[in-house]
Length: 268
Ligand code: ADP
Image (cartoon, rainbow, N blue to C red):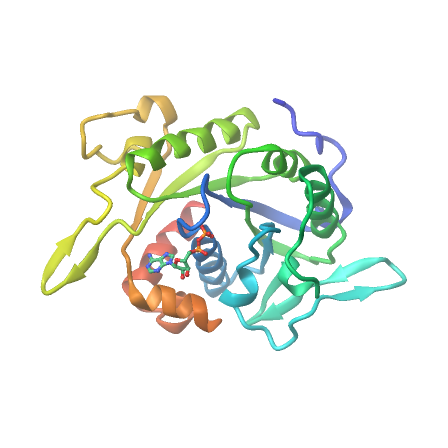
């Protein structure tokens, strides 16, 4: 599927969005939603008009990670459109705000629902829409990438060797779709305790996929040519802020994590 189907017929709801950034991972639990949400709030802090679309139907995290006053999406019955909810100026759409329980759906149905939710939302003028992709590189992800004219992809991984294989899969999917993969975020790379730095998952898988010197001599820069690699440490504040509904970059805008996201924000 080399050619996205949107060519020439951009879905109505997406026509007023300048940049659509996919945040993707091949597995659940690596921190994809954490990255998507913090990236979005960083871009907003930089002055951009931003929306987040949580496309993870099976495990929507957005309602936990941000706490808008209005926790239900509204419908415009005449236009049959969805009005996003909002938190600190960022527009939000997630299945978790749709008032249904956890979805039990088959793949094609999921794709249909995701596409409908995404393209019938009244996003308005946005500089960035950040899409928190469902984990993996299967049909649901592929269909989504074909419907949406992505301008950039960010891949989130952890430092294990196995995760690197997953990153490769993700990069290949985006490259087939001609979407530039601008950065890999290696999450949970280390933690600091008692004045020492620990690497619980070993050192560097993401580094194999970017131009940063590979820590274990496997240099596959040529293979993928991803321009940026970012490390995110394990931080109790990151998980606490994820649970509290107030993203870390909002809670601590001058902190180390916020600075990393500012650099990532410039890349997308
Ligand atoms: P995914 O979207 O890949 O499933 P999440 O972003 O939901 O992953 O993260 C899974 C859990 O791990 C969440 O509770 C989140 O707060 C926590 N978490 C993610 N990254 C970090 C980190 N660097 N430090 C501490 N906790 C983290």
